[in-house]
Image 1 (cartoon, rainbow, N blue to C red):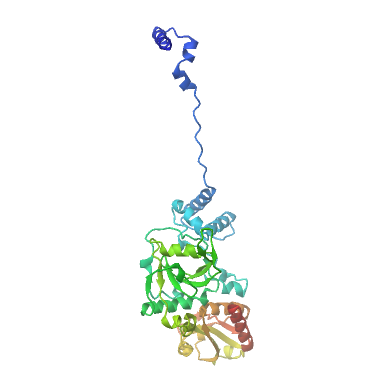
Image 2 (cartoon, helix red, strand yellow; image 1 turned 135 degrees about the vertical axis):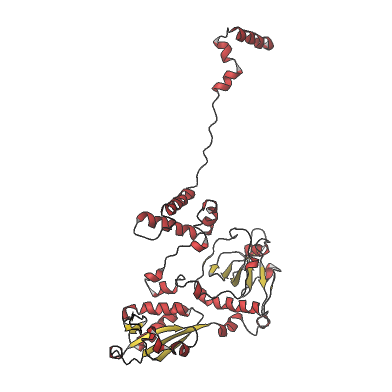
Length: 398
């Protein structure tokens, strides 16, 4: 019966005698009136749109990155970009749309607090005071242990290490001991040997296990603990767990390695910290008085220069009569401080900012007739200098 109806419909269609019932019963009509399923709009991550706004701004301004200016738009984009750079998870998330490599480490925009320090603490905690020439190059090239692909750490809670200057000498000593063969770089054996005072290499970065927290049994029945790691690049991680760190070291893509210990440390005869003592003198802070015969200079009784010497102070001032910084005159050393476990230049900068209101503007003519304006000369008593430097040293050790 149904078969015949279809035939009758076909015959009537050929004859041009279709009625409404014939049309409504046609399968083709059902297809024509069927609702087209709506496509689900794929949500756009707002962070991508925000980052794209930064990219467009940089392009519009000839490749210039936004700065902390008085222009509210530029200032807002500067803060946003800085926020992205401070969060490793955002660097990974935005990597595919970062067409200008704005999040690459070499392009980091950091506020230079030294231009307008609010306090001595601001100066002492500012790691942007020095350019690359002030940093000691690694004694050993660890680049062969770095990954050949770009990926984020399994843990993303690294932050700038507080008081990294206290640990930097340890890394210098260990690098020296690796270079001379006292220490070896070997494959990681077992996580049971991850203990305070040991050094490892994770993804090409030398690190120091500062402390291991209280051990506990995790939900999987494994022994775990919270670690505090210090990295040679000046960062630290206080949140990583023992199991996660061990997983990193055993990851073939990260080329984890262990640095062997020194036998005297193993036997309890010395510690790496003790052996570092003779290795960590970073320079000398010195105070000198001018012995110039120029009455415009000799009339000041409490005129002192505060400087820094990486090696011998005597060697540094040996040519004082020919240097504008010493007012083209011999000088007399009146006080010195040996700087250990801290950057001497950073300490010098802190001292100069402490005495900024005591600085004297001096003009001295050169042999070519030009005028030099040496800095670092201060009209202040020696007692006040000593008290201030001692105060800063106390802050460093607190």
